[in-house]
Amino acid sequence: MPRTPDPIEDDLGSLPAPPPPVFHVEQALLGALLLEPHRAAGLTGITAEAFSTAAHAALFTAIRSLPAPDPAEHAKNTTWLNQVLTAAGEQTRGLSVAYLHRMVQLCPQPQHAPAYGRIIEAEHARRLVRAAAHRLIHTALDTSLPHRVATTLAEAGALTTVVDDIANRFPPHPGSPPRTPATPDLAYDEEAAGEEQVLLASATDRPASVERMRWLTPGDFIHPLHAGLWQCLTTMARRGTPIDPVTLRWEAQHHGLLTHEVQPAGPLGFLREPSGCDPEYWGERILQRSLLTTAHHTGRHIETLTHDPVTTTYQLVVGARRALASLNAVRTRWHYATTPTSANRPARTRAERAPAVPRAGPPPTTAPPAVRTPR
Image (cartoon, rainbow, N blue to C red; front, side, top):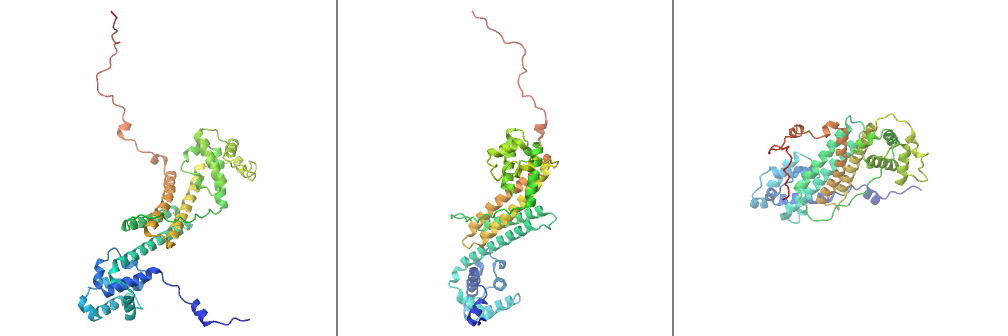
C-alpha cells in the first residue's frame, strides 16, 4: 500500500539542524553592543574570527570599526544602526533591520557583554583545537605525503602551539580532570605483523643490536605476542643471557607467552628462519608506524574532547596536553633512533679532553718516615 504523505511530518523532517548554543550567546552580545555601543571598548581578546557565522562576524567588525554614537542621540534615532547595517552589508548578505532589532530583544542584560564575549572566545578556542586536531589526524593517515613523519610532527607542533596559546588566555582553576575517551584498539595489520616477525628473527640472530635499540618498546608493536617477545629479548640483553631461538622460547615460557594456542613449533616458528636483515632498520620501521599511529590516536582523542559539551576550556587544555605528552614521548625516541650515534653523545668539553693537571702542593717525598725508638 503506498504511503500517504503527511505534510506536517515531512516539514519537520526538512527542518534545519538547530544552531549551537553559542549562536544565541553571539546574538546576545551583538544585541548588547547595538543597544549600548560604548560597551564594545570593554571587550578584549575577542575578534571577528571568534563568531560562528559570517553575518555575526560582519556585524561585530562593523560595530568595532564605527565610532560609538552619543548615548542620548542613539536612544532617539536609528542613524547609527543604519550605518552598522550598511557597513556589515558590504561584507555579507542577508542582514536586515528586523534581524538587528531581534538581537536587541534577545539580549537580557547588556551589562553582561564581557561574560558573553568570554563564552564566545571559549567556544572559538574549542573550534581552533578541533581544527588543529583534525589536520593532525588526516596528516598521520595521508600515505601520499613525501615526508609523512616530518609533516605529521609539524602538525603536532602546530596543535601544541594552539593549546599553549589557549592555556595562556584561560588561566587554570580548580575542577575535575577531563573525562578520558576510550582508546581505540589497534587494527590488525598483516604487513605490520610480518615486519615485526622479521625484526624478532633478525634480533634473535644478532642479539648485540638489542641493547642498541633501547628506543624501541613493547608498546610499539601491534601484536601482543610480538610485544611480549621483544620484552623477553630486552630483558635477556640486560641480564647478559645468551640469546638464540631456544633461550628465547624458554624466556617466553616464563613470561607466560606459551599457551595452548602459542607453541614453539607454531606461531614461534619464524624465529628459526634465517634472517640476514638489519634489526635496526626494521626497528625504525616499526617505530615509525607507532609514531604515526600515536599521532592519529592523539588527534582523535583531542577531537573527541572538543565534541564533548561537558568539557570546559581548562579541561580541554589539560586533556590535550596529556595526549600530546604521549606523542612527544614517542617523538623523542624517534629522534634518538634516527639521529647518528655521534650526535646523540654530548660533546666533550676542553677540560674533559685535556690531561689532568696535578693539584698544587709540596712535592712528594720519597724518604721513608722517621721511626721513633722507644726509650
